[in-house]
Image 1: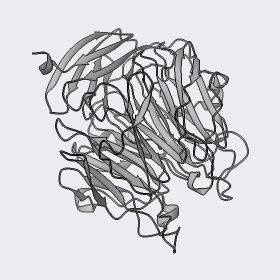
Image 2: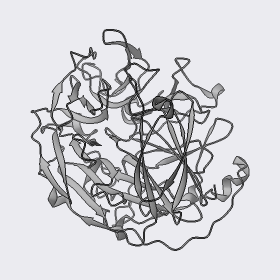
Image 3: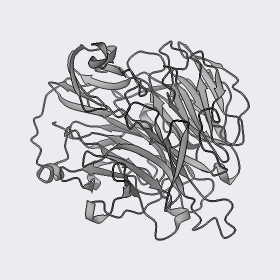
Length: 505
């Protein structure tokens, strides 16, 4: 891969070959927020965090639909009617929602929702027509009254998924809230439902992601909020196969920060995901090394984004949802970070613009949110990059605390070619969660792990997006969840559904 920071070339031992290409347009977005129904994420201190959004197709028309947390207000399901027209679906009254993740739990081909709450979590069964029913009890999902703020899932075979739940402060602790982080939990599938395993210690997780780590092994990464664990806490990695937390002997160095969100994507073309951890202050990008270790990115890369980039508020920023995506389809992955004060924390910036960090040809990131038109200063929380109008460009939705939803249409001119890839297989894991998609073009190699989790309080199940730059064809290599591989050729500028070849025999 040609994109690598000079300071890391020797350390990672990657040979670089630069490819020339035409100039692409600067990113621009059109504010289409008025197309959405009224909705605000609001509430008391239990909703200072959260505010996630789930994006998925709930009726099979290939248009991304929206489920937005409401906090003290009811959560809202918003149907995409096409051409940036949206309908309020008036889902059943469900409050105290911090966020949600789409997932097909019962393998019926219809996307369900795991809805996180400050209180009893709810699993909504999708019926394929944007209607849902409460399946929490029917599917044997364990419940309690915890304050859930993080979720991820994976499959250990052909049955039902394993679910991991991240809980925040234990509201029943009389000595809290400081140093009162609740335990987390893993829900293991059984023949009759699920059984819960306590995952302790918990350090107030605000994001969890099950994915292959720098060792190439399946691992739970937990990003934790130092504000409430105060001391003796840290970021955590839990080896799924061995069932234990990693430590320095595994190459997992102790890192403590005000962890808010996780974004994961291979930036160097070596097949290993780099990881962005949002926080109050620095946004920490960790580079995956061939030795299985992570190294902090050099400051010069431009991703730390520790202070507002517009206005005169020089106090540190607060990062929440982060998401990688190729905004201009030039073949280089860019980064969006939702920013906003927790509420009125005096030591942090109160007018804190969101970041749109565009990756340049030299693999550094350049701030473009203000000129692109997405540098709003509301208290942003959750967000998603998705193609709401099916034109091949990633649009943007943002959830704000105590302010309306924001929706932006990507109007960038002179963009490159693109490809959407959707994976399908038979059995319990119909969406092939745990697979890795590799894209090969003359410009280099890209890869995406097909996962559920990460972000801040929300995620998406949609075809995976790749910018191809000037390439008009690509070779796709899929590493399926069971380790088998398949190879496919594709023309650019299409959504490609790939069925696992073994299922077609």
